[in-house]
Image 1 (tube, one colour):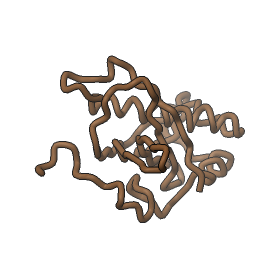
Image 2 (tube, helix red, strand yellow; image 1 turned 90 degrees about the horizontal axis):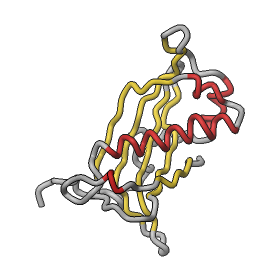
Image 3 (cartoon, helix red, strand yellow; image 1 turned 90 degrees about the vertical axis):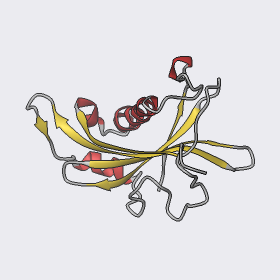
Length: 162
């Protein structure tokens, strides 16, 4: 299964009074990666219908570690965990990978996306072309935004008691 990789720039304005990227900003990061995946990459692969409309039905986010502003972008990996008739679930990891291969995961998340017909004002079915594109990035064994079998990256949630 392939993952879509997006290098997300960090902006000075993303920080909050505590000196780290604000929790709400991570939703914007996820949106940027999702737009690149579902609009830009899908269109390049011949599945451009997503750009005609889609809505978010649900977000779920696990904050693992604080992310501090720096000039280098953070990596967002995106993949699909479920393709339904008229919805899909996108999973993400926002992370850094060191030269030795060690990963630091800041956020694990998932989003339920519903393709939407803007002219009709209602949800629509996922087309066969979209389904084929999404299938290249599908890992249905990973339903919670976590890599299969990957518990080495788990950390206490930010703010958890020590």
